[in-house]
Length: 67
Image (cartoon, rainbow, N blue to C red):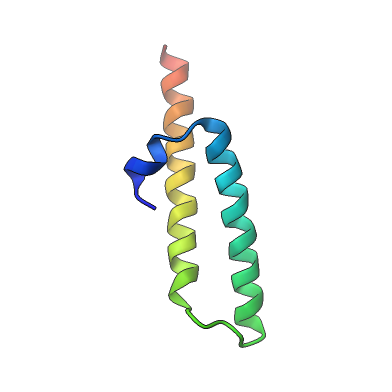
């Protein structure tokens, strides 16, 4: 997911997407532990998506404080 796509989402959508990604990351780590993970690069991609969403949420939080 691109940062420009993330910035278009509302705060509620961002929070729900963040929760979904955290759940997916948990499942991927579990699969990794029991050697059933097919694509290990998916863990990296999910972590980056989580970081992007948290960054946009923080930007929105700081932007709302200034206005």
